[in-house]
Length: 397
Image (cartoon, rainbow, N blue to C red; front, side, top):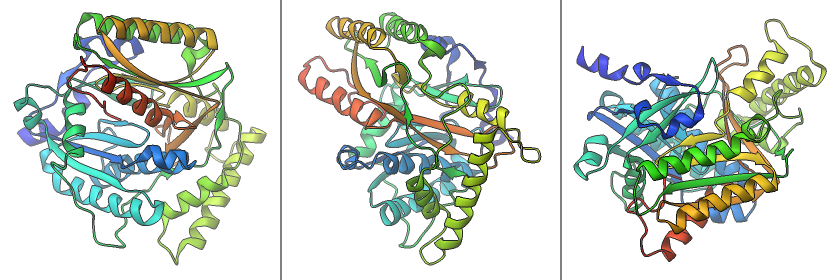
């Protein structure tokens, strides 16, 4: 009985629907000691991005979430997408299945995407033994989808522990494949409408995650909220319907092994063609409501999040971005926070859509020319230059 109650812990975390609530400690609940963090990131993602492999890097990061959701059969699993990696929280009884999923994803990413994925399972109890915490909140992105927000320093500590080789999850045997049902990558880059797609990361400075840092987060969110649709990079009726042949090929790799991929590629192409014709023409198909799907697609995106720091990819004017960066620079000078910021012309969207007929499909947004990964590299460079760098340097990206 206790395990069942603990397993449903996240379902009972209260929802909040005003994003500025990420700075309010009252919205967070401590994860149970018996839980674990599944952590993953791409080794040398900045190198892959320099080669122009932005969509592949995002697909690898999202594959971790897809594999865990499918093997654990948990649609409401608390997770965060980091562009070149991911983090998810789960109760201890799910550890063996999560380990198998991480091991299979590690092998698939190496064999199919030619990338190296680091993976680890970190006990929450170990995080607390090191004086940090792992707290979670639930932001209501839409009526159908909510996203987890993490605070307490535990996520950053877990990532650093993984990078040092602790809690390592080894790769599965060659040829192993995770269940990536629903993972898709069918959209072309989404062009900025207001001037710039900015990927921003802001983490606590020497003064820690206190009232001053919370005020900083509230100020940055308020400045972005001045933009049309709060700086949302996806138009209200979704992106313009256009084929992404590279995305179809990547999705075919997720759907079928070598030797059986032709059928998968044809089926995905036909599905994509049918969807895009409906979107382009405004046609409904049976119970598929085109207008509702397009609105849900925009509403269900994760363009803003909190994971031991603020992370957002917003479509914003040059003047508003200047004001945001000025506020971040002020906070850095005062020891309140550190930041990384990367500008690009468009955004990328990677999706988990088990079926277009349901409304709980999820869409992960990142900058199309490096996004969070490049912003994180700039943050790390700034921290390396700052002798007062806080103990969670490196963030959760």
